[in-house]
Length: 323
View 1: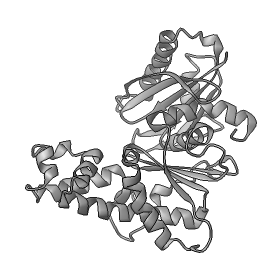
View 2 (view 1 turned 90 degrees about the vertical axis):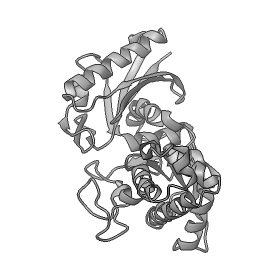
View 3 (view 1 turned 30 degrees about the vertical axis):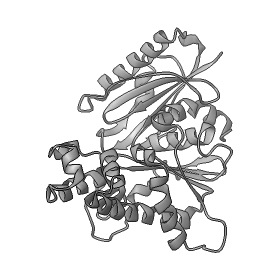
């Protein structure tokens, strides 16, 4: 039996997993990234983590066909490098070359959001669907676009950065250097930062009591939980947030018109509480109101999506298509 190794290189953690040819996770494990180190040390730990999951599952390295790595930022797919990553401060980082010092195997590198989109297309919410967009709402907003069962990333692999479309001219500053990006309003970070500002001035709110006055404990889940419980402060916060999230989704629909738009990340755990108001915004504001509309879904593969998609990269590159 052939196995595939997928690695998610994140800002906080490195996650490595063994995946079968159907996109099913067999085993995974994680280690802290400690991102301020030299990239050689980070990739050394990546190699050690791969060794560990293989050992724990009693899988021989000779049964591994490919290794795939998903990382935020702009990849050079041909060279196996990360050209630019703002959160890890990678510049022309030779992921493939460095990892092949430890494993004599084909290594594929891709943007992490594209990996998540690939995974959802292989074994998740977009299975058997040719046109889809997967939005990963986290520290920023990543996106993976699938067109005709192929990952779309532009001629230079830097396309589909939907989080950096401007929705408010001259608005909030973004990590990319522009102002008013969708990411600056609709990421999990933006939601939490806004909530902390508002809750600080509303000590009588339920969420203030939930976190015992420690605003650093405010999370996406806590905000929505308080809103569900009828906390007016958090109901106002989530209402405003969903307007911004919905505005970006309408833009995606108008530009790409995918069959399915998938929302992933911690916020996707809110299910219909999240999707229902977003569907209403989409139906109200989309340009093509009189024909079939894109379906909104939450991701099915959760935190495993990037690892699964990374593991599937070799098969995808071999065939040039999904499925």
